[in-house]
Image (tube, rainbow, N blue to C red):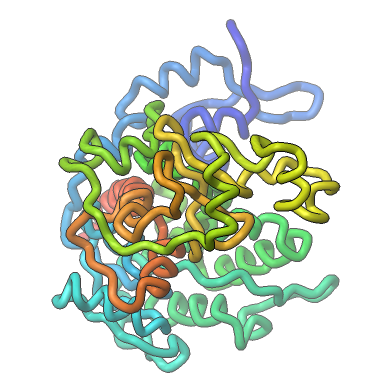
Length: 413
């Protein structure tokens, strides 16, 4: 036998959760070996290779055609400008309700999809009970808020007043078969991990098996941007033991800024000229000196000190400051304000921030998707969005999961 891998390593290779591997072990689908000293599971490389060439490994690849067995219905909270919703729609979901508190974001959704049921306003005022057992998927990216306390067993009521509570309430009232929550990568360490632990405990108390939360890198899912997001997926316990969720398989091809802004695999034309912010004259003079792919350390030492001030003497690379993106690399993570200090994302050839339509393409929004509100509001909507292609990859995997659940339901009829 060749190399061996731990259960965590095997889960990453096969793009499935460790819970799924344990289930496969119990069911005899992929039997693990046991270390006699500590009884830990491990796998031989030959075992993983035999799985990776099977339909199990490829069925949920975002490039595959996973067709919904019926029209799966979803509710999305904190929908923003529609990055997640667009990807899920492309995967085959039909949105029953979308909500956001941002007036400009909901105006964007209504303008582009007048047939969607878009509700603007406070999520706490929405009654989700009429949707009970009529929804297949609940999604949402609620803000990360602290509500954990050391030594205290947290329940749903202890999170009252937070937007997480409203997501949990929507889940409790609508009872979808599956939920998908997304958040910043920092949620892993937020409040020393207690915040995420509390969320998982609340979801589990409501009858859902929660898979190990996973950070996905957008560059692996046909997104020309180094963006990372944390995703939490839960499956109703009545189905969880009989189905397997397979995380979307990442592509080996990395798309660059050129792929985003020029005609190619991602878009049929070069990006159109659109409104965009400008740098103040002082900053422009600094960025004029930065080469494509460079940042503040490419300045003369006296200008480094002048521009960075006290930060010059602190540790860390701070590679996002005074950064000019090159054509041959993915963009750094877009922010809500393209010209603010420390998050400069300068155009490769021209000394300016990316324009609105360039921003949208880097997030893989289609060119026909129009954003409402002022230019500042449009940047904010785009910067906050889940990249459309990343959402599509996840949506495809979720359709595959719901197809498995549908087969179980049909078999009982």
